[in-house]
Length: 258
Image 1 (cartoon, helix red, strand yellow):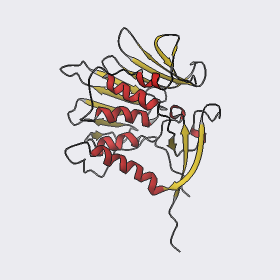
Image 2 (cartoon, helix red, strand yellow; image 1 turned 90 degrees about the vertical axis):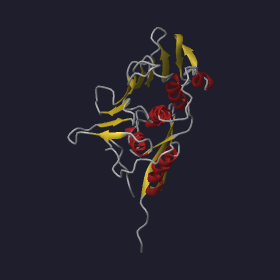
Image 3 (cartoon, helix red, strand yellow; image 1 turned 45 degrees about the horizontal axis):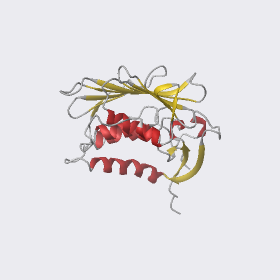
């Protein structure tokens, strides 16, 4: 009898900000293959460096238990000084991808008229402590803007904000349409898939998350990334990168096949 197709154990978790980091390939592979970002790495170091085609943006993924895993640095432009964004290890890749997807979208509205708080207010977030700080309905996330500098922070924790699960930081001069893309992804109610199992989640409290388990064909999991690459590549006038060697996947989740 022919072998049965392998299945992958998938857990679908909501809210997504408590789902853990996910697979870095969700970000790095489309940037390379669909958006033309070039990569280079030291084979002896667990890191990925991706640079934009115009060499103005550099994304660094460097696993560090005591620091930020993801950092995107952007060079100054005629109308904007240099800026950066950084994300901790447990920042869900879907939210970082929302940021990089808009960054690489040639049709995106790049005006300064965007308000990153708007998606939060629409989703029912409420003011917390002082002006320019909003808290999620479940009390586990707060988003704060520095009125003096224009920098933004997104802090996620389980209790009283004494120990952060993850933090995203957008420096002064970060384009507001990119921060808005992140806050919109933060409020997206759809669950996100994870393959590492419940033990990898920052919490399994049924008071904070909902989790559903399914087995799906491994080809379906791979197909989701390929569809994402095709969708992003379609935004460009030129063909996607032809390299068949995507960036390495440090700390990527391992599929449990059956």
